[in-house]
Image (cartoon, rainbow, N blue to C red; front, side):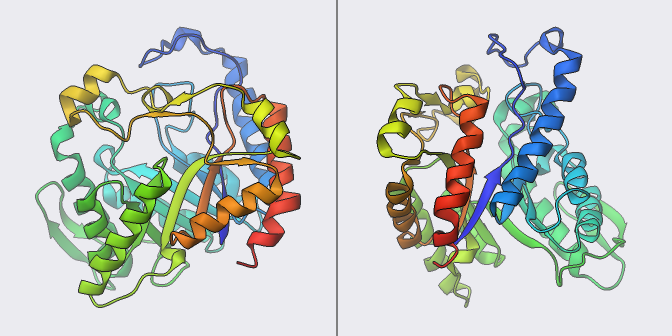
Length: 347
């Protein structure tokens, strides 16, 4: 079982305006620098505590996740972190040139000595609209981009690509990735079509903020579809991202969490009207009443056991929660690292 610290890089001050896009006038320049430095130190702390991965993602126009370029942030981490893997859990394919993405990830793999992991994502509807792409085509565009990148990493000779969304007369990626044939690749599995895509291309399945029952269903479908393709995934092929809060006891964790809820639509700054107009009413965009992992070490170990039984081998954990201070986040990470990680590494 691998444990990943989700380095979400939240703005290091309170911003009461929850609109998207958030006005740049609300961004203090000095606080921006503090945010980046604090996030790097927290990533280094996670590595020191024994987390196997540190992950970064891509989002735009918001103080909630300040990594519009996860490549730049990951490049900085390659020069500071010496052991943990660096997981880019989501370059957004509809917003990107896939060949540029393939080249930059290959650079990062070389800079890190072969420690890169990647999850290619579609992005939230508002971000796609802002970048002037057609949201209705985002899934197909993402899947074609992933197929192109996989070929760019493995094809030994220059080749051309004529697809529906991407056309390149010549593709010849330098440098090659350090990992052979390429870094571990995941794709989102929150929808059945995406699960089938992962199985068909023999790549990992990533799930995020779903209830455990839905995780089990997606993993079972993944195994069924992979069997049709003639291969068998393992737990290492399944990644689950969720909220976590670990304290010295169940009672302390409950006090820290309080009665706050997280609305995933607010978390990702997705306007309700945009969601309804673009993707329909998405039931997975719901309120979460408590982190998936929540409690003292013994309770959290039992919860991790349920994940393992569901077929999950990689946990990507966000320690951010509305009622939890930055100092409490650090303490939660520390309890996780000192009291839980040594035991789950034996699973």
